[in-house]
Every structure is written in C-alpha cells, then in structure tokens.
Length: 115
Image (cartoon, rainbow, N blue to C red):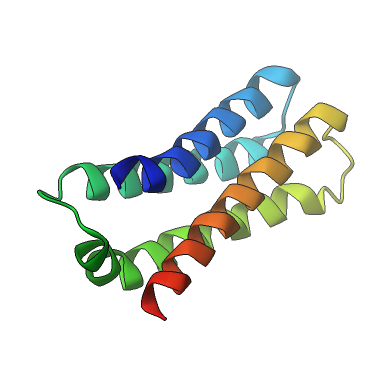
C-alpha cells in the first residue's frame, strides 16, 4: 500500500534531481525544483509516519493534505515547462514532464480513492 503511494513521489524526486544534473538551470528553475523537493519530502514523511496505513486511512489522511501538495508539484512542473526563456534542453523538458505526470498520476489515484 505504501509503495503504491511512495513510488510516484520517489519518481518525482528523482526526475527533479536529474533535471538539476542535466545542465545549467537558472535561479527561478532552481527555486521551483527546491519547492518540488520540499513538497515531495513532506508527502513522503506523511505517508511513512502513518502507522498501519490502509486505503481507508490513506483516503482520510491524504484527501486534503496530498491534493494541496500535489497541486503544488504539478504547478511547479508546469512553470518549468512554460520555459518562456528557453533554458530547458530536451532531457530537462522530459524530466519536467515526468514530474508533472507522476504528480497527476498520484492525484488521480487519490481522487479514485474518494469515489
């Protein structure tokens, strides 16, 4: 159960790190990636510190808290993809898409839990 929630969060963190390592990023992009890292860590901590996490507890715990965090991650990724100054290369753009896709995937799972 925890793995199903943690895997997309770990993928978000890994993609953010790869994006950082690929090439030079500007100050604004670094701030967005820092925001993504912070939110991902908060979500991970929330999931890991909940004893006996079941789907019912996950729905209860994450329905509000996680939606807010995931909306931040998705928004940060979209700002990176906006790339109005054209500084992201092809690989970096791919990692930003991965961040957004994993955020949306986890959000969809949470919405499905509520149904």
